[in-house]
Length: 247
Ligand SMILES: Nc1ncnc2c1ncn2[C@@H]1O[C@H](COP(=O)(O)OP(=O)(O)O)[C@@H](O)[C@H]1O
Ligand SMILES: [Mg+2]
Image (cartoon, rainbow, N blue to C red; front, side, top):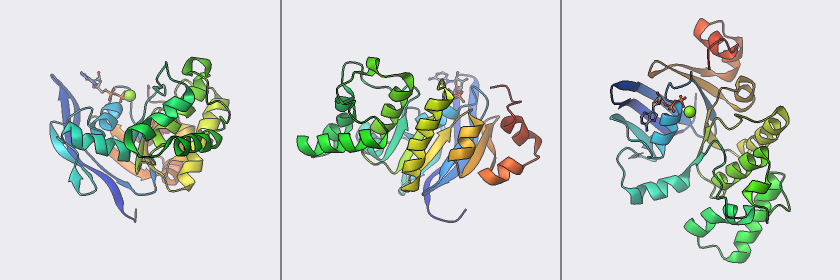
């Protein structure tokens, strides 16, 4: 791959008790790409994403972002990093007692100096982009599962982060809602969004990702372009792309 590296994981090791989860995970994420991350259940995909935003601390290794090692930053330093690298939680993780407008406004109120008029206008702009115009006053409980996920994605990108981390964003969605979410993501990808896309959803990854990495036995066993992967006859690759790998 050519281009500028946005994020680099170098030799990440992580154990929980006796259980070795990461045993030398290394990969680069390039600016403007979406990198898919495949791996069987429990291989440590979520722990990778959580480590990037400082919710887990690797035992060894470096996570380099903007010439800074993200491992062992203070909470104060992490606060800033989390405005630049955003994590889309599996269920959207909206605040139940806040309306959709308040949920989307939340990061803007916490991290920007925008006034209420500007915030309202940004929220409306985003609602339109995710096909949820006019839903401002609805509570999360009044939204369908698909809408909640799109709203969670929207909240994660309100601050226009440099990198977005998706943890199985299409899990539990029906095909129609999967297509809607993927369309929203693709719209932002066209604007140059950079991200890591953890998924078991092979068709979704093939649609969204530029390259795909496979996490296997504590390491990235291979990284290849999505096009190469579609054509590959490598048995490990096939076990993922055909779904033969037990998820
Ligand atoms: N906070 C934690 N404490 C103990 N074990 C954990 C913790 N987080 C994850 N694990 C274990 O680490 C392994 C990888 O977890 P995870 O990253 O969630 O897997 P997945 O690839 O399915 O996302 C699993 O065996 C899980 O049980
Ligand atoms: Mg996971």
